Image 1 (cartoon, rainbow, N blue to C red):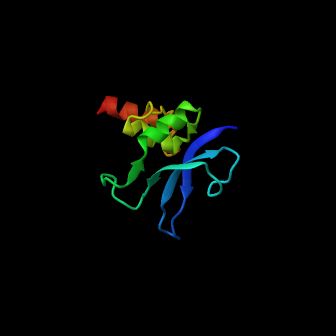
Image 2 (cartoon, one colour):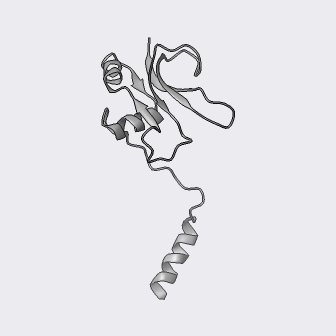
Length: 112
């Protein structure tokens, strides 16, 4: 049984609120879970104390049992110091200038 530490939505329409739960990886997102280990309220400002609440000792217990956090929850745990901060690969920017446009810009910068 693969354990995941993930978000389960619990808010009203257009008012998101999430519980951070430990669940079997085969369970549905908002369905059965093993234990609630925190909450996340994205409607609050990012510096608000109640935006992310974590039960530290329970999270470390479940990580010791082999639970793996999803990307978003791993970011929360990394900021709280409960797990190493995840490393995300640099995503390509589709709006970035293409090769010829970059060459023209470099030539214009060198000339002027």
